[in-house]
Length: 468
Image (cartoon, rainbow, N blue to C red; front, side, top):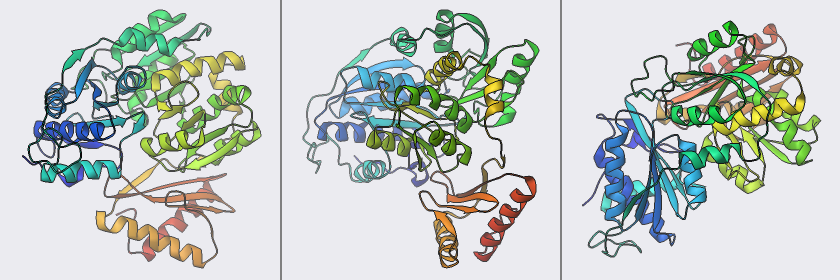
């Protein structure tokens, strides 16, 4: 028995595709067998499994469990819920790994798998190895398997557990925040039932939007990093004179925030606000931001006495850096906020909302006033444009070679982040698409225009037209 995955589903951070086109229940079964083999080779035998609210998730979950059990792993099913609840299960139950079936913030027809092995992200080379083993049927429990875990054996067992109340209790552990008027937009994603439980335990006034879990996403797409998706949240916050609003993506690991005036509080601004109480507790601690974050974030961390570290974009890469550095906090522009200390180093948008309340309590000022006090630069959103898969990395390398020869100030943490007298610009190859991404930041619009002209000149020298 062998299996071949569509290559485009084998992403850097997870396995994800369009169900019925590039992803099927056969893929789910193969993921289960391959991951079970990795778990057993690591000395484990038990895996937690959860799934989000997409229409295809139950069938994929069933097939995944079949594959896990067939390769001799015991499964703990935690049922329908957000990805952070799966992380909570993996960190606190007696299991050796975890798998969440989720399409995250992708279109409704997409789905996939996020994997954790022994409290660390299972990504990059590990995903490629899982696929390579599937191609030759090198799975535990498979007759004739060549792998070290490959002897045939008995099937694993399956148990079910409801962790929702325990997870909510963990979100609120030690929290004694004040009463705020807050809007919560779940976007019909997997956070709905959790937010309903959470807000009954919080003081204040809470306005819940779209908590019914519905894989059709009838109200708006569940991606809070796209401002258009926050229109309903903004309207409720402003019309009802609320303190702020929060929104979640389809699986609850990305957060979006709007202040009392309906302005988006971008993730780097949110991280700057969350850093202050952390650094009060942990003077000199490392705080991590991704390469797309504003320079204002890194300057703010340094002003607060912290050690600002710029790192690669991508939730798995950021988690690894958090583990490696011992940082208590990190985040990226996609809305993933990562919590170290006693919160397992994972990204959890619900916990980020609770920590925002705590930060406001400590500051004694409303969110909009705190945002006003932050430095404000002129910047672009992430500008993403298609470039052939076999060309995207080469283009970045070409640009880097020219910039290096010219003596430019370059940070090569993830692509090219170039600093000039006008500000900075970033060019990097997407880890998940056949695309390049650009972001730029300056102190004025004319300066920003000059930065973008530099980007376009470098791209043109490599035969790429960003506007095409």
